[in-house]
Length: 383
Image 1 (cartoon, rainbow, N blue to C red):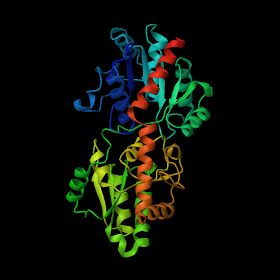
Image 2: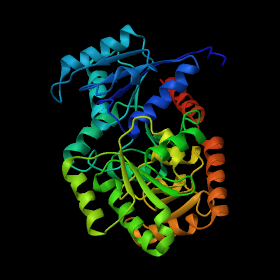
Image 3: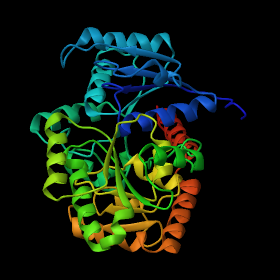
Image 4: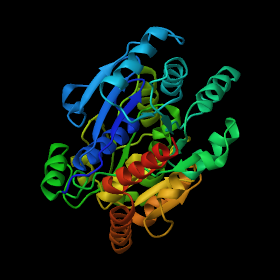
């Protein structure tokens, strides 16, 4: 790849780099920019929360170890770090990091321009008066906000004092080199769980908190098994993710209460692409959702999706083309939609193919970083 003739130095700033959709989004962005000749730095406000192997896409990594909200010592360190590494722009990824960066920019003149991506599915970053006051200050000294779906953009405008023209929509993406169908991985994963090659595997991924709706998927799968009767004995549900003890016990009790069979808790995997190849259909039924990187990863693997009509999910899935949409928190609708796809091999294949094409043409890592670089340059031109 020909390197960019006018490379940028960008600091990606977040509270921590712990596992989740946000980490995957930042890593995709950094990897794409690195390939294009830009330098991407990672800054963590409070703690790192990641292993060394997760940091190879960054030019450098720094933890500022902020101890309190108005930590001017840490804010000065941020300003000095930006000066030392000639950072062109700070890209924050949560309201806490935006405030920290804003404090540095307000207090120390040499701090570069800043923007934020609004990743949150839940509204606790904008819910209270204290949050709104903090955000009002931060937004006054920032240059714009990226949202990963139109739905969350509307939510952000409704909760904060910001003009719509200061928002920029950039959808999430998938690394199609990682998330591609792998026949060997499919056989290996299925053999490990003693699943026959001809069986159907419904996949789901997410932490076990209520907002991600893994309980809805389990209830829907229980309904699906009843609908399929004897044919349901060849249908499995594999769940990737983890939760705290309370959430885990809640899901285990649900399986026991509904007498659900063939549910596999496969655990959390930082590189889940092999498991996606073992799936035949992807079920995603959150109660709250921002944009969901996992949907684009499922499409990149060629999986048809059943998703909830919530947040940014309907913006990712094309109804009746790449999957089916159902009302959030309705296990019976989830079961009905999943059954339609499972019993129709032709439909399942067609939806998977259309999903792959949609991802390949619109939501690759290259699309993602190019849209960001365009926005970065737009912001820098205005400054």
